[in-house]
Length: 371
Image 1 (cartoon, rainbow, N blue to C red):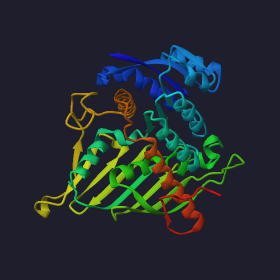
Image 2: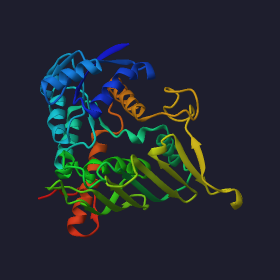
Image 3: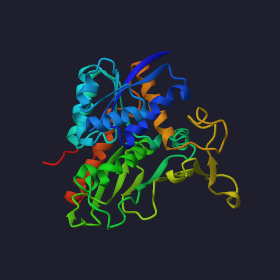
């Protein structure tokens, strides 16, 4: 088994998750490439040293450039704020290094387009971090849809709702500044990615967003608290997506309901080890949604646990991502979701913004950013 030096930019919430995943992925999935936690960068030398010691990195750096340029670092994980993504990825690709970038791809549609183009031109392996779609249950939902278990899709309803800013007394922070950190920029990409993965390309949207709490502690909030969009899929299916960070009681409301011509599927991330399936067959008196508990027969479950119904968790999704990234590097071929897939999400988000400005349906393909 060959080792590969991993450099992570960012040591906070997602930086830790990726460090833990890289440390665990080898024994969990028996990967051909075994990660070596080589170097971590953070916003200061002190925090980087703290992360290096806590997570098991060999070295620390206060500047992301040191991580990207280090010869011992052979692959880069970007887990830093959105506005930093483009520069880090460009520098890594210039050195021929594979890049895993947390969602969203960039801080703007222009960022996303530039990053996707650079990734394609570089020939390097690249992936975007949409972890929630990788639960065994959601992978199984994709499989059922592809197999035609619920027929042709006619309706998709999805939401990503949380309540971390539901209390209006909470103070202003980086989360309440700038479009990239609002609900459309921060939460929406996950559910848009799910819609694309489960129901296919989106061609048109009608979107709107609003700020529920205009000020926090006397400081103006400059981005959106909640947003929604009606959408039309290339298949002809209709859809509705809703996103909120002020939805009281919702902690991880990544949920979807999909209706087809022969059945339906329901899922809620707060019960991530269950998928609900309705098949329009048999006697009407016996019909109803069946709760399917994930187990070893479902995608990527057995590597974590041999017992059905025992369940997987959030960190396991990140480990699955690490497995896919390493497999892509080993094969020399990018794997879904690529930077192009990240760009597809960014285009839907941008179309929703332009739709709100114009008060009309907006096409997704080739949507123009703010002028």
